[in-house]
Each structure stands twice: as C-alpha cells, then as structure tokens.
Length: 240
Image (tube, rainbow, N blue to C red; front, side, top):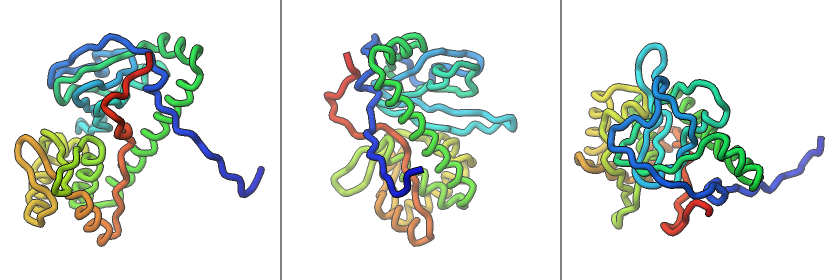
C-alpha cells in the first residue's frame, strides 16, 4: 500500500454523456412511480421539482430527496429489483428518461457515463448518510434549521437582500423531509421568523442562510449540504 499518495479525481457530469430524449410532463401531485406502480427508467428533471420518499413499516412517510432541474432519480432501475420508493411531482414537472438497456448501450459507447453515474450515486448516498446522522444526533429545532439550509442550497434562488428563496414548500413537506410532524415544523418556523432568520408566505420561504448557519455553529451543529446538481448555466443541456 502506497502511503502519502493523493488522487486527483475529476468529477464527471452524467448530463454530458446522456443522450437527448423526448420529454414527458407530469402534473402537480402525480405519482411518477411507486412500489405498486413500478417504472424501470432513470429520470432527469428538466423543469419543476420531484420528491422521492419512502414509507417504512411503521407508516410514516419520509422524503429521501427533493429533485430539482438537472437532477436524476430512479437509479434503482439500473440495478434491478423492486423499488421501495415513491416519486411524486411537487410542481408540474417535465422529465426526460431512459431505460436500463438504453443506459447500458450508452455506457458501451461512452464509458465515462458509467463513471459519472457511479460518482453521482456515491454523492447521493453520502448526503443521505449525513441527513440520517443529523436526524439521529440533533433535536428538532436544530433539525429544522439544518433542513432549511439544505433546501435553500438545493432548490433556492438568491435574493438581493442576502436571503435565499425556496418556492412553495408546505410545512407538511418539510416535516416529511425532516421526519417529524407538521405541527412541530410550524412551531419552529414561527420561532425562526420571530428571530428574523426566515420569512415566509404560502408561496415561498426566504431563508437567511448565513445567519441560520451561524446560529447552528454557536450550538456546535454543522449543516451537511445536499448532493444536488451544481448551479449550471441555463444553456447547459443533455448531450446529443
């Protein structure tokens, strides 16, 4: 084993190597796939947002990920077997998708796609592990603040006053993301609003991310970031 050696890994982007396909639109609230409505396809979000959730045996739905534009989901199709996930359009969503044979054929033509997908899956697994550890280690007030930082980074847009705006996420959805009740989330959101760390209406939530992170740091808590797609230029498209 060579000691003291460091590797310089190049992060590959799957969108560079995936072939362009026709798109399909799913209305808000529509189920894209579930354990009873299976789909053997890898999906790309072109427009809108999709939530991917699981429901354990005790019956409480938990959001595993919220997928925003240029994010992939449905990776279980690549390994086969029955999915335990449910994917639902949070907004009207425009999606592109590929079957497992199409992905395998494209990897044969462009091997870097295999590397890019492997890297993407590893980043998602690491982000999910960070979330699980956060949920286990911290109390609900800290978990709500961590979730708001993550969601702002994943699906938010910057405002001139330094806040980050998250469009139209209900307290119920945030509760599913954290693994708690809507009532507890509403109580904590009101507390954070009184502290001037957030503001919200039914249409948006504005998060002062740096201020929330500073409060978390004072409490000895860090906010692991989601493995969402990098902020790309609007002209970036899937490879031809």
